[in-house]
Length: 126
Image (tube, rainbow, N blue to C red; front, side):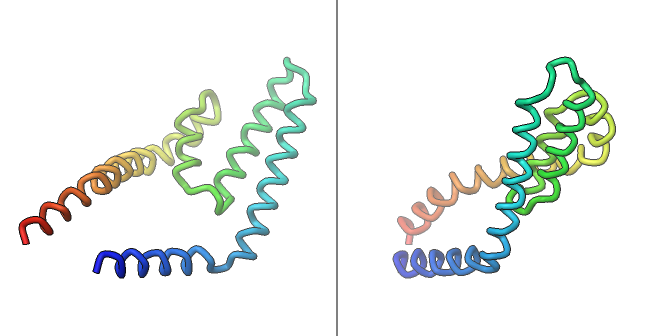
């Protein structure tokens, strides 16, 4: 029974992940290309050009926010870890979402750890 459930889950996950693969691949490539452009710009700027650094940082955050290869939490984490004007503008809009996601991830990790133990205990009792 366990093997059947495992194989069924594997098939469902593979099927769901394969949906719209070509479209996602194009989006990933576009995002990667834009990130490469930002990296090249960073390598070629003067170290005292603060405005350009801010511009690149804002564009990077926009890429995180607009790309499907990044989950929303990546954007929230970027805003949380940022400082200065960008954080002041964005933090009040994403603060609740950030903390909700942190709590959700902790609960999910606890469930992933406890679920096998609980299942083992239930199967051992039955």
